[in-house]
Image 1 (cartoon, rainbow, N blue to C red):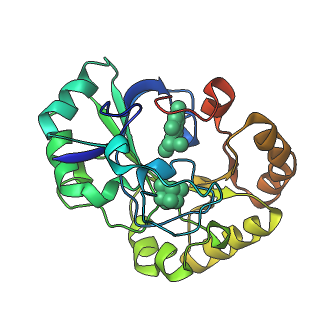
Image 2: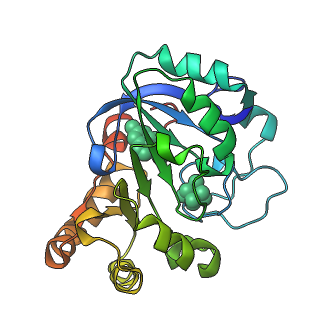
Image 3: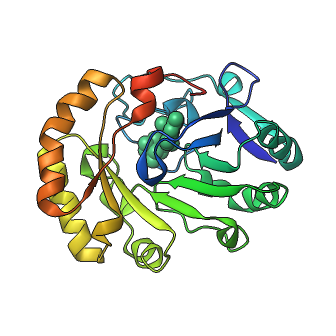
Amino acid sequence: MLTLATTTPGEPEIFASLQGEGPSIGRPVAFVRLSRCNLACTWCDTAYTWRFEGDNRPHRDGLAFERKANQVVLDEADVAARIMALGQDRLVITGGEPLLQGTALARMVTLLEGMSVEIETNGTVAPHPALDPLVSQYNVSPKLKHSGNPVDSAQIPERFAEWIQKPQVWFKFVVATPDDVAEVLDLIETHRLPRERTFVMPEGTDSATLRERERWLAPLALQHGLRLSDRMHIHLYGDTRGT
Ligand SMILES: Nc1nc2[nH]cc(C(=O)O)c2c(=O)[nH]1
Ligand code: SF4
Ligand SMILES: [Mg+2]
């Protein structure tokens, strides 16, 4: 069984869209969004995957979501069939933190036919050994200090050491201020991250914020040999579920 996020109560967040971020930006793909996260970023744009009633960890919107309306449990075959019905040749698995459900994900991915698989992860959870060989690309997005998570939960040296061994890994850091870029550069040094496979991406859930931050972020990316990612889906669809 897999616990998924919902678009509307009872409806799993499984949809076709253009990948809006990272190395596959612009690619038509199927998406599946899983519920639950082990971190709690204050600016998380998918707090409906984890900030359920009774969870008092700080979030900038202060919203608490009703668990029943925002989670749906489906079996692996049902999830695979809904994904296949979208008719895409690539799947992006996101969340929340999808690797928390690695065993069930491996069973689900095995049922897909003719699809490559890309995973969005916060990088703190090792991929299940049954899932790992089925994944073409990991977009690993370690969380910086401004996320509000304890640094020892969000930045785990052993995990970085494992990720950098995998050729299918890209790093993608969400930044809100120039100071965040300095922290990214420190992490690159400390953990020997591959600069040519490292993105910086502005934090923001509206076009104006993304554009404003890209104005100072672009020259920093150029100066330090990092890639810049936009969040194209925000410009196209706004901050909405199922897009
Ligand atoms: N179109 C689109 N692209 C995305 N890339 C990463 C997403 C995510 O929420 O992880 C996302 C998303 O939610 N929508
Ligand atoms: S790691 Fe991702 S899903 Fe989890 S709280 Fe942070 S931004 Fe949200
Ligand atoms: Mg998103």
